[in-house]
Image 1: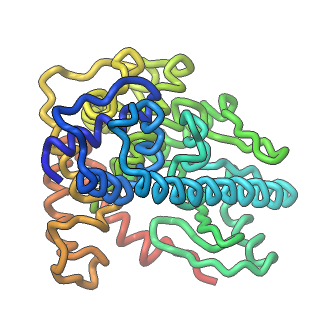
Image 2: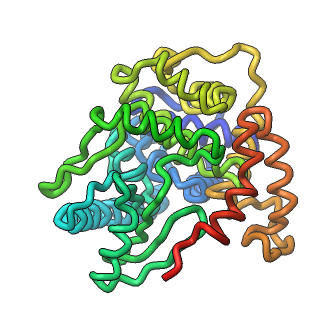
Length: 366
């Protein structure tokens, strides 16, 4: 995709994300242009947001009726999948609660609730965290219910329930620095009485407090950027969270959390990108970022890498090693380690150590 078309793509993304504005072009978009935009949106898991921009476009700027129909069919599938996700969340929450567990829903549908049209956010899997040592209890419950699960690296397990991918996590935040473990536990306890709730099918499902929800989403983005990349959808998640929660967070407190965890430079870079590329208003950020940031390269990498780095055309046809399912995995990891070291040095340093530990020692074995 050429740069002018990339600019139009981001215009459409902002229109869909915020529900206002106009599309500015110097020429009508051709069928080929729209075909490229559609493919780019799917690769970056934001086709629902681009579709939402159509209500703001005059007839002459819209794609052809055939593409609109194709797009509408895909959106219908997304809506149906999200509805099934919500049903599954309610079913699991009921099962966990009846077993005496206290689950917290991570990311996903809790973040979708901050969107203008929640059902148009592309869903991944359903992620749960359990308070008070509940991870082991939940694991035993899966055995009791005869659900087949797999213990995985990264202190997690996964399984299928109602044909939906489910993950349980021992760790609430994607912070690899082991020296911050006690601090993370402290802020988790500190904010335990400030939870939000998502109501689905008569179930009141607990979400993290606004500050910790932002921390979780933003560290998740960092985690994947340090390795092989992440899609635009997660950046949209962060933008919508700031927009929705800005009046409910304590700016100085959130800044101190980022600073204490050693990721404040990353937070500054992220905020800059949310404003410049996704149209988040600066007033909705909890604190200002330096004016001399040079981090546009991060968005370029996000653009090329696609969702979790699986669609990076720059590495198509390259060899896959035992290290990673990604082509040229070792080279890509080393390059990203060097790139992101200045923004979160301890997270970069401890990534390989945590991966080794979690895959060798940290996996539960019966």
